[in-house]
Image 1: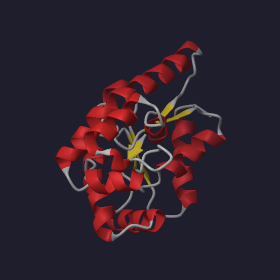
Image 2: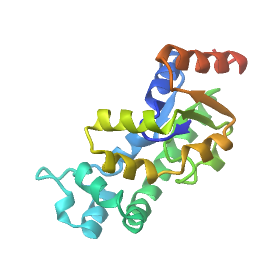
Image 3: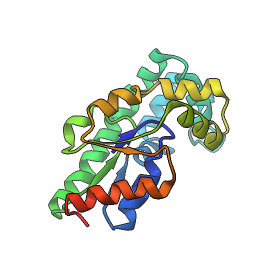
Image 4: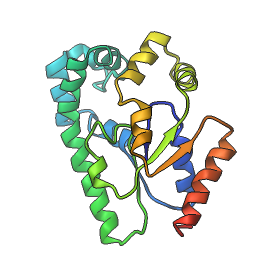
Length: 193
Protein backbone atom coordinates (compact mmCIF):
# COMPACT_ATOMS: atom_id res chain seq x y z
CA UNK A 1 0.00 0.00 0.00
CA UNK A 2 1.31 3.39 -0.94
CA UNK A 3 0.13 6.87 -1.71
CA UNK A 4 1.62 10.22 -0.88
CA UNK A 5 2.29 12.02 2.32
CA UNK A 6 -1.03 12.90 4.04
CA UNK A 7 -3.19 10.95 1.57
CA UNK A 8 -4.70 8.79 4.32
CA UNK A 9 -2.63 5.60 4.34
CA UNK A 10 -2.96 5.41 8.13
CA UNK A 11 -6.74 5.41 7.85
CA UNK A 12 -6.57 2.55 5.37
CA UNK A 13 -4.04 0.71 7.55
CA UNK A 14 -6.56 0.90 10.38
CA UNK A 15 -8.99 -1.18 8.30
CA UNK A 16 -6.37 -3.93 8.04
CA UNK A 17 -5.47 -3.68 11.74
CA UNK A 18 -9.17 -3.96 12.67
CA UNK A 19 -9.28 -7.26 10.79
CA UNK A 20 -6.05 -8.58 12.38
CA UNK A 21 -4.20 -8.33 9.06
CA UNK A 22 -0.55 -7.53 9.79
CA UNK A 23 0.78 -4.21 8.57
CA UNK A 24 4.48 -3.51 8.17
CA UNK A 25 4.79 0.25 8.52
CA UNK A 26 7.78 1.63 6.61
CA UNK A 27 7.59 4.95 8.47
CA UNK A 28 7.79 3.14 11.81
CA UNK A 29 10.76 1.12 10.60
CA UNK A 30 12.39 4.33 9.34
CA UNK A 31 12.10 5.73 12.88
CA UNK A 32 13.49 2.56 14.41
CA UNK A 33 16.62 2.46 12.23
CA UNK A 34 17.64 5.95 13.40
CA UNK A 35 17.20 5.39 17.12
CA UNK A 36 20.02 6.63 19.38
CA UNK A 37 23.26 4.67 19.03
CA UNK A 38 22.17 3.15 15.70
CA UNK A 39 24.66 3.05 12.85
CA UNK A 40 22.27 5.05 10.62
CA UNK A 41 21.91 7.86 13.16
CA UNK A 42 25.67 8.06 13.60
CA UNK A 43 26.08 8.31 9.84
CA UNK A 44 23.38 11.01 9.61
CA UNK A 45 25.19 13.07 12.25
CA UNK A 46 28.51 12.58 10.44
CA UNK A 47 27.00 13.54 7.07
CA UNK A 48 24.69 16.40 8.02
CA UNK A 49 26.25 17.59 11.27
CA UNK A 50 25.67 17.12 14.98
CA UNK A 51 23.06 19.89 14.84
CA UNK A 52 20.68 17.29 13.40
CA UNK A 53 20.58 15.67 16.84
CA UNK A 54 18.48 16.73 19.81
CA UNK A 55 20.27 17.28 23.16
CA UNK A 56 19.08 13.80 24.24
CA UNK A 57 20.80 12.19 21.23
CA UNK A 58 17.64 11.56 19.21
CA UNK A 59 17.22 12.71 15.64
CA UNK A 60 15.86 16.22 15.13
CA UNK A 61 13.41 15.13 12.46
CA UNK A 62 11.98 18.55 11.77
CA UNK A 63 15.41 20.14 11.23
CA UNK A 64 16.64 17.27 9.05
CA UNK A 65 13.38 17.34 7.07
CA UNK A 66 13.67 21.07 6.42
CA UNK A 67 17.23 20.49 5.23
CA UNK A 68 16.71 17.52 2.91
CA UNK A 69 13.25 18.16 1.50
CA UNK A 70 14.43 21.35 -0.18
CA UNK A 71 17.47 19.78 -1.83
CA UNK A 72 17.33 16.63 -3.99
CA UNK A 73 21.04 15.89 -3.50
CA UNK A 74 20.75 16.08 0.28
CA UNK A 75 17.64 13.88 0.21
CA UNK A 76 19.54 11.35 -1.88
CA UNK A 77 22.34 11.35 0.73
CA UNK A 78 19.81 10.69 3.50
CA UNK A 79 18.14 7.90 1.52
CA UNK A 80 21.53 6.30 0.85
CA UNK A 81 22.04 6.12 4.62
CA UNK A 82 18.62 4.92 5.72
CA UNK A 83 17.37 2.81 2.80
CA UNK A 84 19.67 -0.20 3.32
CA UNK A 85 18.72 -0.43 7.00
CA UNK A 86 15.01 -0.10 6.20
CA UNK A 87 15.19 -2.72 3.43
CA UNK A 88 16.91 -5.16 5.78
CA UNK A 89 14.31 -4.68 8.53
CA UNK A 90 11.40 -5.04 6.08
CA UNK A 91 12.80 -8.23 4.56
CA UNK A 92 13.28 -9.70 8.04
CA UNK A 93 9.63 -9.00 8.97
CA UNK A 94 8.29 -10.32 5.67
CA UNK A 95 10.33 -13.51 6.09
CA UNK A 96 8.84 -14.03 9.55
CA UNK A 97 5.29 -13.74 8.18
CA UNK A 98 6.13 -16.10 5.31
CA UNK A 99 7.37 -18.70 7.80
CA UNK A 100 3.99 -18.41 9.55
CA UNK A 101 2.22 -18.69 6.16
CA UNK A 102 0.28 -15.50 6.82
CA UNK A 103 -2.16 -15.13 3.87
CA UNK A 104 -1.96 -11.33 3.63
CA UNK A 105 0.63 -8.89 4.89
CA UNK A 106 0.29 -5.22 4.09
CA UNK A 107 3.42 -3.19 3.53
CA UNK A 108 2.53 0.45 4.20
CA UNK A 109 5.20 2.40 2.31
CA UNK A 110 4.75 5.99 1.18
CA UNK A 111 7.88 5.58 -0.95
CA UNK A 112 7.08 2.14 -2.37
CA UNK A 113 8.39 3.15 -5.80
CA UNK A 114 11.06 5.61 -4.76
CA UNK A 115 12.51 3.05 -2.35
CA UNK A 116 12.46 0.22 -4.93
CA UNK A 117 10.02 -1.93 -2.96
CA UNK A 118 7.40 -2.29 -5.71
CA UNK A 119 9.18 -5.37 -7.09
CA UNK A 120 8.78 -7.12 -3.73
CA UNK A 121 4.98 -6.96 -3.53
CA UNK A 122 2.21 -8.88 -5.27
CA UNK A 123 -0.49 -6.18 -5.38
CA UNK A 124 -0.12 -2.40 -5.35
CA UNK A 125 -2.81 -0.43 -3.57
CA UNK A 126 -2.61 3.35 -3.88
CA UNK A 127 -4.46 5.66 -1.49
CA UNK A 128 -5.16 8.80 -3.48
CA UNK A 129 -6.86 12.17 -3.32
CA UNK A 130 -6.60 15.52 -5.05
CA UNK A 131 -3.49 17.65 -4.54
CA UNK A 132 -5.31 20.56 -2.87
CA UNK A 133 -6.78 18.29 -0.20
CA UNK A 134 -3.43 16.55 0.29
CA UNK A 135 -1.69 19.90 0.77
CA UNK A 136 -4.32 21.17 3.22
CA UNK A 137 -4.23 17.94 5.25
CA UNK A 138 -0.44 17.96 5.44
CA UNK A 139 -0.29 21.60 6.52
CA UNK A 140 -2.92 21.01 9.22
CA UNK A 141 -1.53 17.68 10.42
CA UNK A 142 2.11 18.71 10.69
CA UNK A 143 1.53 22.42 11.33
CA UNK A 144 3.85 23.39 8.49
CA UNK A 145 3.94 26.19 5.99
CA UNK A 146 2.62 25.74 2.48
CA UNK A 147 6.19 25.96 1.13
CA UNK A 148 7.42 23.19 3.43
CA UNK A 149 4.35 21.05 2.70
CA UNK A 150 4.83 21.43 -1.06
CA UNK A 151 8.51 20.47 -0.68
CA UNK A 152 7.51 17.28 1.12
CA UNK A 153 4.87 16.39 -1.46
CA UNK A 154 7.21 17.17 -4.35
CA UNK A 155 9.96 14.99 -2.88
CA UNK A 156 7.81 11.95 -3.66
CA UNK A 157 6.83 10.45 -6.97
CA UNK A 158 3.68 12.24 -8.20
CA UNK A 159 0.50 10.56 -7.00
CA UNK A 160 -0.82 10.36 -10.58
CA UNK A 161 2.15 8.18 -11.57
CA UNK A 162 1.47 5.83 -8.65
CA UNK A 163 -2.21 5.62 -9.58
CA UNK A 164 -1.25 4.69 -13.16
CA UNK A 165 0.51 1.50 -12.02
CA UNK A 166 -1.83 0.57 -9.17
CA UNK A 167 -3.75 -2.68 -9.03
CA UNK A 168 -6.31 -0.96 -6.80
CA UNK A 169 -6.89 2.72 -6.09
CA UNK A 170 -8.59 3.77 -2.87
CA UNK A 171 -10.13 7.23 -3.23
CA UNK A 172 -9.71 9.02 0.09
CA UNK A 173 -11.06 12.40 -0.96
CA UNK A 174 -14.44 11.86 0.71
CA UNK A 175 -15.71 10.73 4.10
CA UNK A 176 -13.62 8.09 5.89
CA UNK A 177 -16.53 5.63 5.88
CA UNK A 178 -16.45 5.60 2.07
CA UNK A 179 -12.70 5.07 2.10
CA UNK A 180 -12.98 2.14 4.50
CA UNK A 181 -15.83 0.63 2.48
CA UNK A 182 -13.60 0.52 -0.62
CA UNK A 183 -10.95 -1.45 1.29
CA UNK A 184 -13.49 -3.87 2.76
CA UNK A 185 -14.99 -4.41 -0.70
CA UNK A 186 -11.52 -5.29 -2.05
CA UNK A 187 -10.85 -7.66 0.87
CA UNK A 188 -14.20 -9.37 0.28
CA UNK A 189 -13.46 -9.68 -3.44
CA UNK A 190 -10.09 -11.23 -2.64
CA UNK A 191 -11.80 -13.45 -0.02
CA UNK A 192 -9.44 -12.18 2.65
CA UNK A 193 -12.01 -11.37 5.37
